[in-house]
Image (cartoon, rainbow, N blue to C red; front, side, top):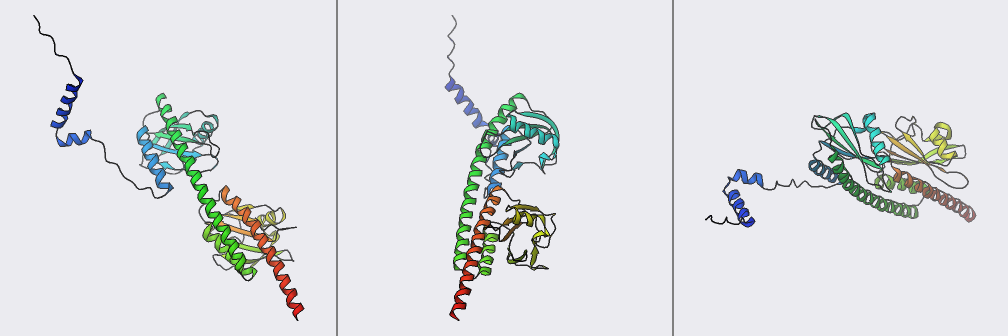
Length: 341
């Protein structure tokens, strides 16, 4: 008569596995344990995106990873990429197609990576729909193509990136709005407590340069003979001539005659453009019936965005009112002085 077989127990099996792992050497036990966290500090937005994209690329087994916003709503961040991945026309077209159609696209391309390798397979997935940005996630691999299951993974990663991107844009806008509000407060304070117009304008130029990240700020006022004279500059510099004529440059004409803000790139010629300028904004100092002059703002590296342009328009109106009020005050003072004599 056969003896009944002993009933198998999952508890006993688990205990045997634990005993076997405990008997392994310390080197093997470390391999079975969790890897140590890198603990990289993220002191700014760039560092934070580096941590995010590195972790997401590791989870999805990508050799390179980036995202692109087509409207320039946010600066591009990247993992293991060198240069602009959209420099290739085919890749740029795939990004635009994916962003506008909502369809994931795979293509072959040669994209250099920061580690010296060359990625050949590219997967482009649209970012989640948003009111503040339109763009796509770009994943790259070396030596092997993407499979159908990778498209599902890419959609999940695109959702995470979209969420973080929306939070980053909101936080950046709040920071910009606080900075702009502080700048307007400082401008109003200088306008109230400065004794004369030139002093007020110089204080305004200094606030614009130090508070709103402009590398240069110049203020030119119109004269009766259709010329303009520079009344303030930050930082202080010397010009061959402190006089400018309305027809010396199309940007000046556009600002004064069409009452509109004009963007000027580094290739523009003119002694009135601040030195070492990559891009400049020429803003009319609006008043009735015609602008009283121009505000010239310039940066050497960071390009101007929509927030900068909107704020510059506000500054043009504000400074125009400052000049108008000061001119009226100066005239009244002259009249009172003449009557006293």
